[in-house]
Every structure is written in structure tokens, then in C-alpha cells.
Length: 232
Ligand SMILES: N[C@@H](CCC(=O)N[C@@H](CS)C(=O)NCC(=O)O)C(=O)O
Image (cartoon, rainbow, N blue to C red; front, side):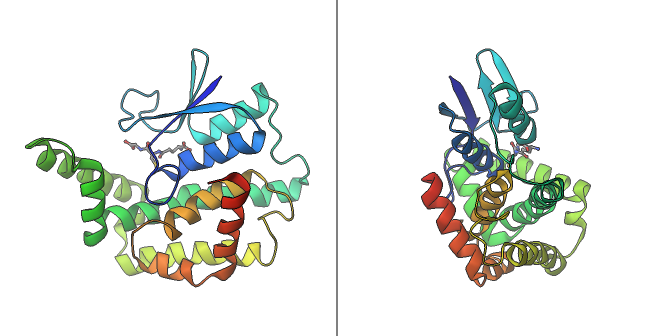
């Protein structure tokens, strides 16, 4: 039996992390049986991050490696109907979400003062004093440093949200009137696009990014379609 180790459901999604939601959808898309194991602290995981897939004694970290593992070891078929050109587009949109939009989402949750208050209460509110004061400060500092190291965190807030809105516009424009990103069939790119758009649309974090997503009707309809299809 496969076990998906992930952060618990939160903020209107099956996990607080869109990478975990992505893998949950991939498992469903592959039709594989799995159980979920919720974990709040990833420090003991191979990359100190989640998601991680457990297959027997083996731990597979990282959603990209998990996707490859499911295809090679469990014969999952995600994108078999796609041409080489379509696969390239699917890959590019996946990377756009995971390597850029993710950082804008992280910024909106952790760097916006009122959203940070919600995050702090959600993740650290249950820690006894004095940890409740010290731990969130430390983690907040780490997130700020990772945003700076990635580069997004060096821009002012207006520019950061502009980057993210342009990403959403590209997704919305490419989706157009199609039911799913690559056409009538769901593909691996939908697992990622849904997970990241849902992390914006359904989470209680107001921002220019969320306001822009709310105006994109085809993205809203797409999310509804994905929720119905995968019982999310
Ligand atoms: N490249 C990884 C990214 C996973 C990731 O960044 N997970 C975050 C949550 S969204 C995490 O576990 N962060 C914990 C940390 O950085 O300490 C993947 O595709 O799975």
C-alpha cells in the first residue's frame, strides 16, 4: 500500500501545501490505492520537505520524483495521449506554478502582515509559551530568507503580485474554454495547476493575487470541475 505523507488539510485544500495536493491528485488520476499520513513537521523527512511517498520501506521525496516513480514503478499513465509539443507546454506550465507562482503564494501568506497573523495562529497557535513566541519568529525569518534567496523576496509587494497575476493570466489564457489544460482529458499539468490555483482561490488570504484570480471565470469553473472530478 502506498502512503502519501503530507501536511494536513487546511485553507480550503486537502493539504496546506499545493505540492501535497498535486501528488494526491496524481495518485487519484493513476487510480492507485493509497492512504494519507498527515505530518506537521517535515524535519525528519529525506529533504526535510513534504510531500513524501512511502512505498513499503522506501521513501520518495519531492512531487516531481514521486510523479516519475508512479509512472515507472506503478505504470501510472498521465500524459500518454500528448504529443512532444504538448508535453513541452504541460511541462512549462507545471514549472511556472512550482517555480514562480509558488513563491508569490508563499509571499502573500507569510509577508503580508494580516495574512501572516492567520498563518501564525494556524501553525503556531497551539505551541505552549514561550515556543509560541520564539518559533514563529524563527520560521518567519527562514521564509523571508528563502524568498530573498529565490529572488522574489527582493522585489516590492506591487511587483511580486504583478509577477503572480501575469502567471495566472497565462494559465487562464491558455486554458481558454477547454475543460482541462491540455484539452478534454485531465493530465499531470492539471494536478499542479489546480493545486496552485486552489491555494490562491480557496484560501483565506486576501491579496491582489486572489482578487485577480477571482475575476478569472474560466479558472473558477476549472477548479469546480477538478473538485468534482477528484472529490477534492
Ligand atoms: N520541490 C518540492 C517542493 C516541496 C515543498 O517546497 N514543500 C514545502 C511545503 S509547500 C515544505 O515542505 N517546506 C518545509 C520547509 O521548507 O521547511 C516538491 O515538488 O515536492
